[in-house]
Length: 121
Length: 113
Image 1 (tube, rainbow over the protein chains, first blue to last red):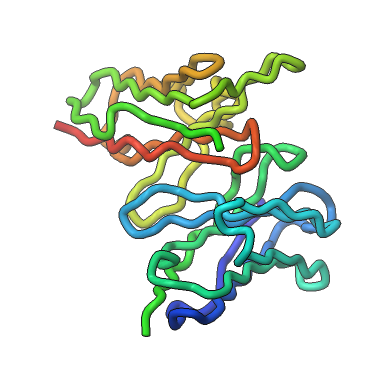
Image 2: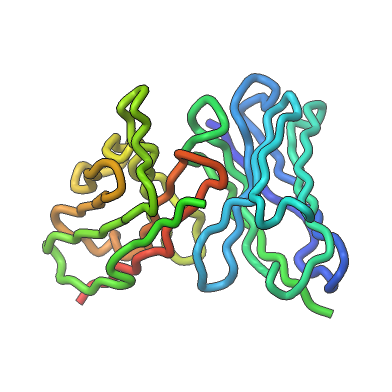
């Protein structure tokens, strides 16, 4: 059974860089699938941030593309998110997930439990 | 970007009633090459991640009760809960995966009367 677990600082200062890691267990990310990040501001809806394949191929939401980098570490079976120049509007629960169908266009399953990142000085 | 619009924003029904949640996409999410609608539905309960219910607009995920069903094609889709149970209280989201960026509806909150 595939399980995902997000980790990283829960508080980031404005203008700094948000960094999160997603540890995957029960499946080798080097085998197949795209892996992704989605966020949800408190009390609001879901926003896809971007997706990555173990080959390094990435797709980002154009609304965030200039500030986002997603990378993969196959040796640790994990992938990471970096979001630069954060502001209060980046405060959200960040989820890591797997794109369940083969390819870049897919539904998401499973999901990590999510981690709340607050941007505040 | 494909904009996903759900209706209603909230729904209050009694136990055993039928719940209908609509999702409209700003352009068709039906791929003519494979005749599949690139549309999924999720259920999210407080403090939990979204749970996949339906993909390909009408394929129920394994383990999802059969009171949940999805229908529709092109730009108009519906999630139906045939007989509302207490555990169905949640926010429901539709998602299109026809094109990048992948986008979600704003959510529909379902409550019990």
